[in-house]
Image 1 (cartoon, one colour):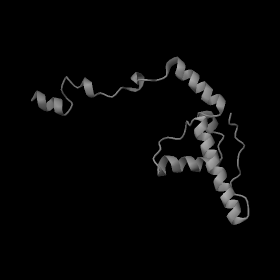
Image 2 (cartoon, one colour):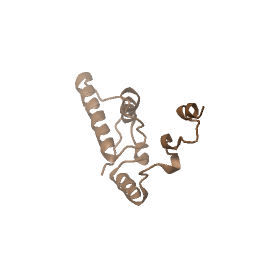
Image 3 (cartoon, one colour):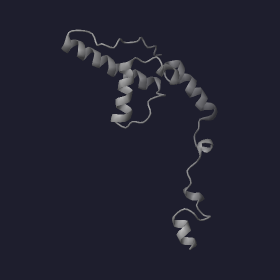
Image 4 (cartoon, helix red, strand yellow):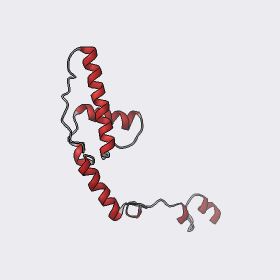
Length: 113
């Protein structure tokens, strides 16, 4: 009976397969993680700069998150946001070359770096 309980995870010896809880996650950053977050924010990344994206940039994020399965896009690094900005600029340029007019969603000036 004990082997059955252990097999389904109800036995006393199931500590080997436990996932760390939110407070116990390995590599949470500590001191150096805080510095990295501040550098990322100073370079133009992080949650605060996500608020400054225009709708096309948010659309690019949605395609990456839901269409390509790249995970949450709500706290991207400055490099990732710069890449998204390049993608949206490419879409705007292609739209302008095909339609002969500007893209209907205005581009917000983003501060990267």
